[in-house]
Amino acid sequence: MRLSARNQIPGTVKSVTAGQVMAEIVVEIAGGHQVVAAISAESARQLGLSPGKRVVAVVKSTEVMIGVED
Image (cartoon, rainbow, N blue to C red; front, side, top):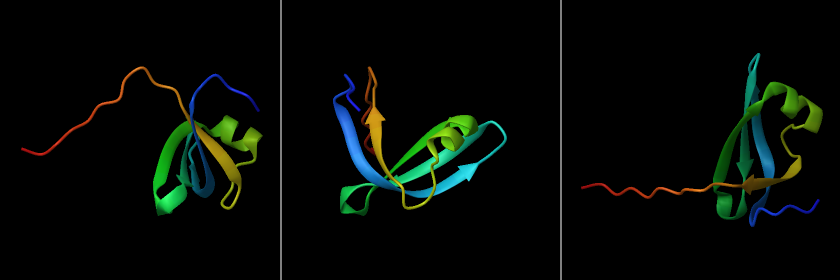
């Protein structure tokens, strides 16, 4: 798979919580950190996502916000 997106993070699916329309996919990445994605339930089904499956989280965004506490 080749993509133009540069932010590609390999990881392993930790959990899949599927609703009727959307699914929440938790991906464990290096260092024990997690990335959470909300995708359509149909896409999750078609991709065969389940715990333990190796995946690549692809981040394509035009904006990243940083916040700090006062």
